[in-house]
Image 1 (cartoon, helix red, strand yellow):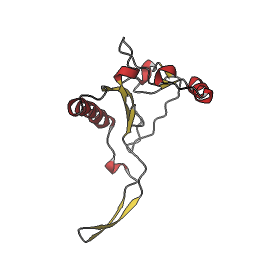
Image 2 (cartoon, helix red, strand yellow; image 1 turned 90 degrees about the vertical axis):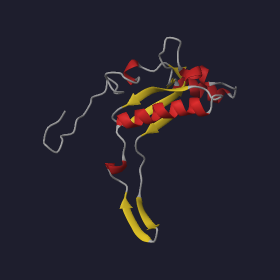
Image 3 (tube, helix red, strand yellow; image 1 turned 135 degrees about the vertical axis):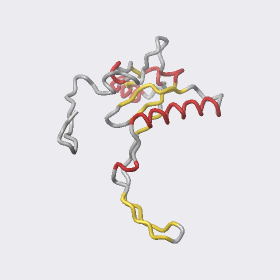
Image 4 (cartoon, one colour; image 1 turned 180 degrees about the vertical axis):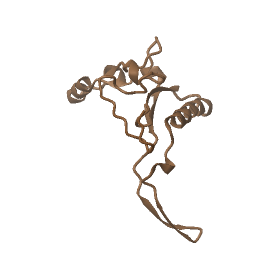
Length: 144
């Protein structure tokens, strides 16, 4: 699986570029992509992997979380069920038991079904319906 979040914590960049002093604070949203851009990037990345590396396994966008602007590319042969659903969740109890056993194991041994609300295109946009969703007031004083 390949998780592709929109942002990573950055620090202030200071240095020279072509002899010009540069000082830029990257801790703002100016340099961040929105969820649709990250999704499009991931779809293009999967297509490019398939085109440029035909011997590699096939990857597809499986899950998306709109709030964190994160998209998950998953390996189809390991994680896509025959009915088109995805097994991208991890059964952590099983994983830890397998790890403690000292025996070899594969993803097949600890993968778990992804809940429908986390799948790409779900109405919940990746939000667990049992969680309470919080909305910030926008600059105009309105919330969603």
